[in-house]
Length: 591
Image (tube, rainbow, N blue to C red):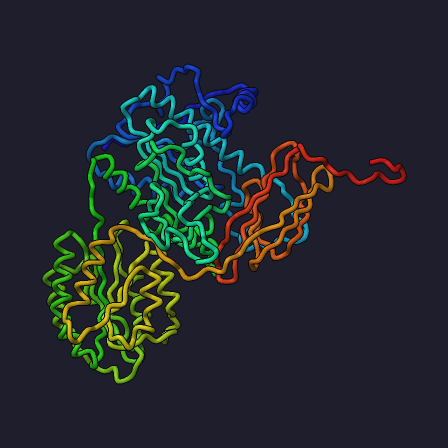
């Protein structure tokens, strides 16, 4: 591989260039470059097979950790052979392109403290305009660069990628780019994500993504586990994909409980979902998608199956009944280039979880040997530590990014909830969502269905009944489900409590202030001003100061329910067209 590292080229631009560009911006705020410029001495315009254009998150320096993790994944996926790859990170060139250089200021969207900041009766809009202006400037830079780069290098394949504010830069840029110029576009945690299949039916409390699955998914939905994900925290670009020409090219990734783009808010870990893309394999999975696109590979996702066997003495009938089926299923997964892990558990008062082999050490032969070596003992009481065992096994194994992930628990006992170490059913569910999600199957007797039904149902798995009269039925169903449900799916995290914002009014009180009032059926609301997150409020009236009425002001509110669901974001605009109310001057009688 030829990785080109470019030096920064210093160019002086006249001060009026930026004003001139803004004066001729199109409706989307993105400058459509048309003038001819000589780029022969610009190292960023050296032609390579692939040009990666990356946009970073709010407040990040060039070459941030997310940039590093993504580019490492991207380059590592393609390996040491062709194609040649070069990278341009928006904002790198001093002076930018045509006066535009993506600044990515460190403001509310990326500042997790804002989410836990309670807003009082008064709040200052302050620098709330800088976020939106940053996104527009980044998009103008991207559009100008890509249009001109493709003129110089028409055979190069341009791939865009961005995280958080950078994802919004990418999705805004697409509104002004012909799909023929873009080979692939990847967005991670986009605050403007829009997934119409996530719109909630308030009567049935379900969505097409929850009830119809992949048949209802948007063509750009790459990995969004939350089936209620509908609009981003900033309301969403409608449509998100501006042209059918982007079918198969645009791919959106939104982690579970990412408050920026998903609907489930983890009230104990507000920002962890949004901050976890660099750690969960999302970048590797996306890079593999692009790799397959580039080489025309229609690859089936690799299968990962982790089996958790109850090894208590009462398991003897089930163990001997399903021992050979477990071996056959593992051999099938191995034959399809998948991976298998094998763990055992019992009661934490007697024993902990035990690893027999994991994804890196299990082979068809030693899996068979390990299964046959399981020794059953103890366990004179019920329930057992299935939830603790599943949780710790999922945390320990090294799941493949983009793989079809499955857990099978084989037990004759109900689960202890909470377990002796404090692990609960909800902990297991949330971890499965965070990983990709992981589908969890439980093979047990019918009397234990109630103990596991919520876990299997909420993770797209299944409770498999131990039929005495129909041997092997459970593993037949398991194999069928693993084969038919390839890739990352969606999960229903439980029935939401519907919360709504209504009766919004914004009344100007001075030349730079306005009073916001609204009704909220939720516990509190997240407030954004001009695309910057300000914090949360549990009041219904706020005085907003330091507004600039010569600009459009967008005020958005997102309700959050007591069980952690973010309702639909509702926005209102204040423009200079509305009358500004100025209090009477003292002793004059005049307004």
